[in-house]
Length: 203
Image 1 (tube, helix red, strand yellow):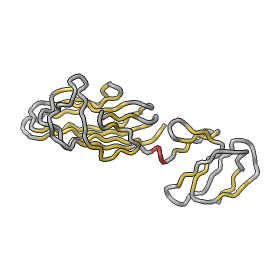
Image 2 (cartoon, rainbow, N blue to C red; image 1 turned 180 degrees about the horizontal axis):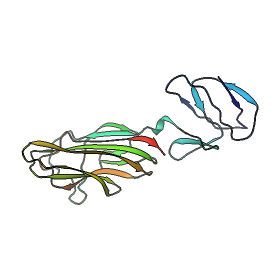
Image 3 (cartoon, one colour; image 1 turned 45 degrees about the vertical axis):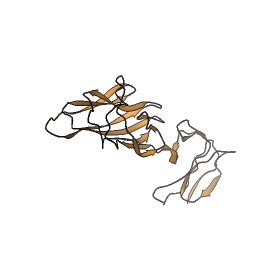
Image 4 (cartoon, rainbow, N blue to C red; image 1 turned 120 degrees about the vertical axis):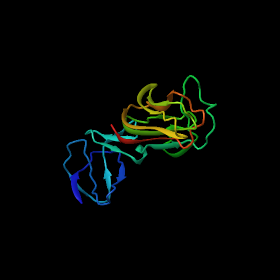
């Protein structure tokens, strides 16, 4: 139980469950109104608030609360070992054919491109396997058509080898992230390759 100031006039309220299950209810006032009220429960209430474009709620005091819809995560895999006949010779995008996780549906499986739904810090990792291919490959993780990190696989004495890397990126809303084959070919296919990412926290 917590005594707080009463929210003035009509106000919009958003209730979010607290993960620990012990929380109290806070009511943030936008004006100087000192009549106390007693609130109790397992939620967080923000009053006198305005919805933001990224799915959160920002109060008149600048307090931001994120809803469950702010969860973003994807993990895609290449489940077949076909030759890259559908891979464009101009874009050289590395395509995936199965989404194991796609919370928020921000990973376009057909284009194999992730588009950020909001500004924030995101984590990405990839593991691109070359199969029965003695060529050296270079895989770039691209942000808006610019390479951010690279990985190489060039051992000619193995039948399978992977180019892997990972990174944290600060993205703006609608930034695009995908994988590009910068060097070599994937003639033998790239079955079991993966590409994953998730929102660490919004900004």
